[in-house]
Figure 1 (cartoon, rainbow, N blue to C red):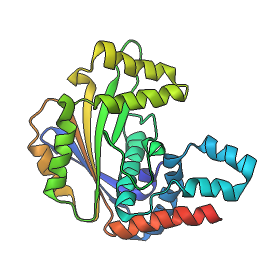
Figure 2 (cartoon, one colour; figure 1 turned 45 degrees about the vertical axis):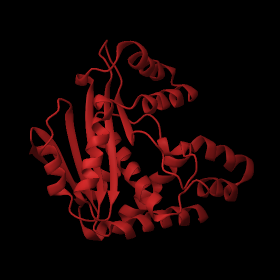
Figure 3 (cartoon, helix red, strand yellow; figure 1 turned 90 degrees about the horizontal axis):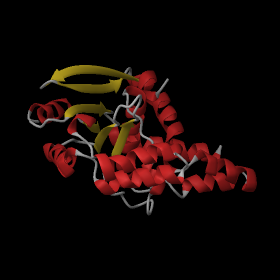
Amino acid sequence: MSIFDDWFEISTEAVNGYDYKAINLLDDDDLEPAIEDIAQVVPDHYIDPESIANTLERLGKPAAANKIRIKLPQTKKLRSGDLGEILATEYINSQTEFDVPIRKLRWHDHREMAMRGDDVIGIVTPNNGQRPHFLKTEAKSRAALGRQVLEDARLALDADDGRPAPHALAFVGDRLREGGNTELADVIDDVQLKDGIAKQQMEHLLFTFTGSNPNNLQKEILETYGGDISQHAVGLRIKTHQKFIADVFEEVENGLDD
């Protein structure tokens, strides 16, 4: 089970031939346990569990906890953006056919610097001679969602002719190869250097994590899309957005001290 199965209700509406999914808490009383469960998955997005296990074995629990702590962003803006990407990744992995093969946030240049490139890239690996499929994702986290934010996300999704940015896809491939997943790294090399990516191999996801109601703006973006790449839109709403983010990271920090 995932955090989305346990604590959230997902409703689907067809808009312009595409699916819009609105996600809300099943019950406002579920807020605290949802925070606890989300806090459990956050550290994995910042650091490889094997690295933590090695430090724990060699240097003990305080050192392992500190190793995670120094990776966590401290500013509200970075925490908001990071949690948006984390939630988008968890959604993709648990609710779609795509898999996000690397945890991008593990390669932050600095914990107070946002990473460049596509927010999240999901992949359906080829099977029985089929070609790989890619999910290019923009994840936006805002207390109050505005139209300009979604228009900027739309521009980002449409960039590079709707495909993943070459440097972003190469980044994924390089990290996979370093981690020993040479098969999938080769798949990425093939589409980048030999075969290309047809639009039939592409899908887009515009994922928002907001305090305000995102439904009308998200559906408006879908209504006005006139391209030829399959679209998905998800609006995850937590009314106490900023407090929720602070509480999640506080729960992560508290868990490191237990």
